[in-house]
Image (cartoon, rainbow, N blue to C red; front, side, top):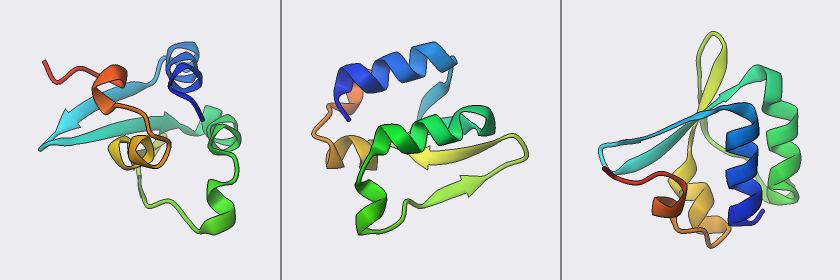
Length: 80
């Protein structure tokens, strides 16, 4: 996954990102979860991704994903 692919996915699906206690979180709606998993590619070949579960979405530590894919988190969501 590249920074541009992630930004396009977030924009196309109108997903919410937010900094919480120095951690960048992403809310992924169930309606686009399969597409998100495809975007991550071979990440699941090596293991799992920790997420929080809510009624209509999952919450993911996007900062950790950015680190894996060498993406600067502040390019995805500013800290302001």
